[in-house]
Length: 233
Ligand SMILES: [Zn+2]
Ligand SMILES: [Zn+2]
Image (cartoon, rainbow, N blue to C red; front, top):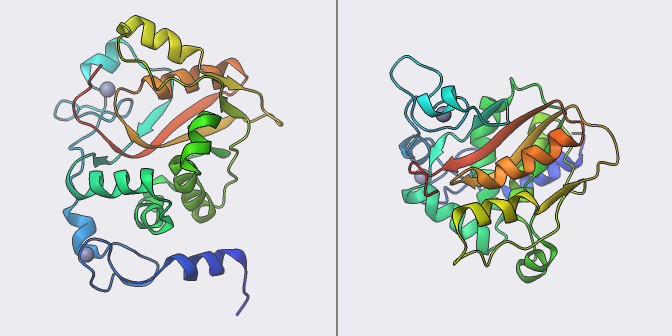
């Protein structure tokens, strides 16, 4: 058998036990079929924001009225229950198995997307230093090798820490966020998938997306494992 990095990674991260129930999850998986299918999904998501759209429609009224800067958004799971628990664990502990658990189940749904590169939403270097890793990069890598696409985690950077935003008005927060990212690509990318673990308001994605478009990217897709159903904007 040809042993390459893909086989190695695949074997290494796959314990075969389901992270939720502990039973055998089957080859290449860390979530068994039963647990995977029991995770809450967004019903009939709007293709631009991922929130539920009216029956039979692809867009919600809000996106129809004011579409976001990206071409589509995919965040199939609801940030609740076991999905929320696992994603919070991934945020605070570098458990590759969690990134693998979601990526190994979701990548096929993304395989029809025509993107050239995957870019994780960056952390500010201080946050990266504190935490030691970027959970969005872990997810991006797990998806990218399955989709046979490159990951670029150097071109889009976070130039400003925006964590201490409480006490600011919504407008001030958005303004802060808008200036928090910078895009300096080493090579020209046309179609980018921006990767995050969870979407809440979408304002971080919006700020990143604007930088990419300003820097010459033609289309941006937003990919995330989950999203919150209420926008706490
Ligand atoms: Zn299970
Ligand atoms: Zn929408």
